[in-house]
Length: 96
Length: 182
Image (tube, rainbow over all chains, first blue to last red; front, side):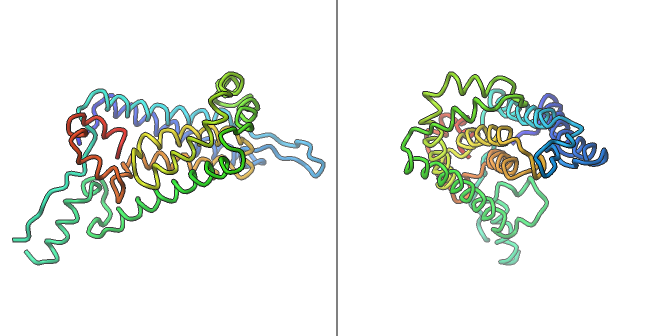
C-alpha cells in the first residue's frame, strides 16, 4: 500500500483534530467549567433544568461528524487516485 | 533458520497488519480478534433488524417519526427532511438494511460497503438519541467507531468471505472492488 500523499496527510490530521477537539478538548472545557460535567442538562427532582452544558452538544457532535466525513472523503480520494486497496499480500513461504 | 523462526515469518507474511502495527504479530491473536469484533458487531445489527422484521415486517413506522424528531442537531434539517420525504424508503429500509449489514459483517462479505451503511445508521442513532445522559462518548458513538474500525482494517479479510472474494478473477480485473470488500 502506498504512503499517504500530502492531501491525505493534511485531511487525516484535520479529521483527527476535529474529532479530538469535539470529544476530548471540549469535554475538558465542559468538565472544568463545573456542573453539568457531561453533555446533558442537569435537572432537579421536579424535572426542571437547573444547569445546561457550557458547550452545545450539537457543536461537539458536529465536529466529530465533520472529522469522520473528511476521513470518508480521504477514502474516496484514495479510491479515485490509486489502482487498488491494500491487499493482504499472501505469499508462500518455503521452510528451506 | 529454526522451525520457530520460519513459523514467525510465515505469520508475518500472511498477516496484513504485519507492517502496520508494532504489536506482536507472531501469533494469530490480532486477526482472530478483528474477526471476533466483526461478527459481534454484525450480530448486533442482524438481531436489531431481524427482530423488527419478525415483529412488524418491512414496515418500521417509528423510523420516520424518529427522524422528524431530530430537530436542533448537528445534522441540521437533513434528518427532518428525510423523515418527511423518505418514509417510503425508511419504513422498509431500516429493518432490511440492518439485517443485511449484520449478515454482511457476520459472513465477512462486502464488509467495507456494509460498514459505511452501518456508520450512517450509527451517526443517526448517536445524534438522534441525543440525551447524552452518560456523556458524549456513549455506546452509540462506540458502535459508530466500530464500523469505522471495520472499514479501516478491512475486517472481512480475516476469516471472512472477502478474503476469498479478493482472490477471484473479477477482483483482479477490477481491483478497486477491494475498497468495497475487505
